[in-house]
Image (cartoon, rainbow, N blue to C red; front, side, top):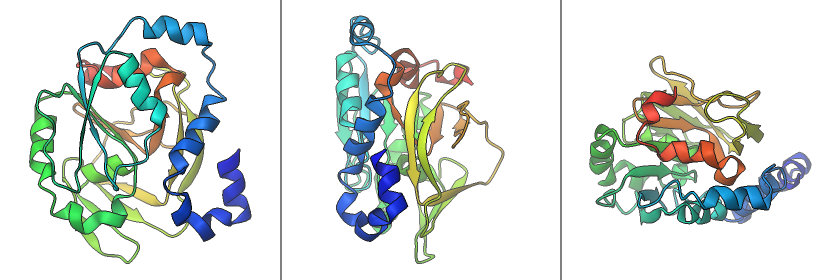
Length: 249
């Protein structure tokens, strides 16, 4: 496991800035080795086109860049149209979007720009529409009330989820995760973050995992620190973008 080896021998912490853009590809490669679905099984599911004619809005910029390339391929293979927007640039959620994915990344490095982002108004409107929202790690941090950076400065985020996240120098969690039962059974992912989450009110855990973040759910939002690999459980992953998301937990 390359990521575990990097952390154990201390190379990652010394050269972490050089690894940032490569981590999604490294993590994807390692997770792919664990996926139980055969090629024929995956091709059978792809033929169903579970997301046909759906428009999936995906946040993508320097703050939201921890994306497995295979997940974008998977969305398109399922028949979805992917539309990108940038929270740093203050873009609105693309018009006509049926679902929203806020992937991981490094919002703590762009907190000043994000605090002033014009995206938050359209994001709140989208959430209030009841359409499904999946937020992973850094994407979850965007939805919170505050992000506290390494220097202890507090930055306002979208204030949609009643959470605060705080950066720390040491890793908060690292490892591969898998849903063991429930609607998302078999779904695999990777958890890697230096922040902690404080819930300001009681929220419903959403994922059944043997270890790692069980996530939180509020209305039509599912959020956690886990970066999910959609092809590991295609049927389960398609539910992230279902209009019936509120009935899944």
